[in-house]
Image (cartoon, rainbow, N blue to C red; front, side):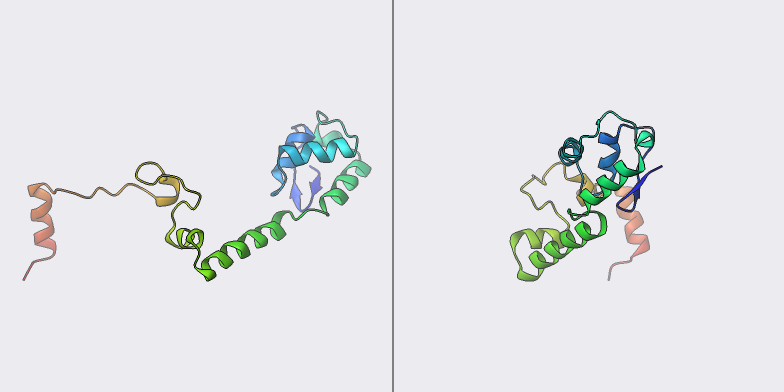
Length: 134
């Protein structure tokens, strides 16, 4: 299993797909790297030579990847929060910050649904027995 930029990339996949396991490298960047280095994108990762692996690693050193990129993104979000921008406030509230609707959807960021509304008699009686009113 070749190790590039601190990430073990999978052996059994084409190198074009394997490079996307590195945080900060997508399909476009992987294709650009392989075309510049003249490496066959359909070649399996375990068939790469040491010199090819080294050349890919050297090319990736020019880009912010993994920890460096995560730190840059985290710092950008902290800056937005600190200056009190709209996007920063949305990040603080844990809501979508890119204009998506929140009346429906947005479940992944807002969490499980919490039903609010009318109570049945049984639920109201349970609530009164647990917390008696004055």
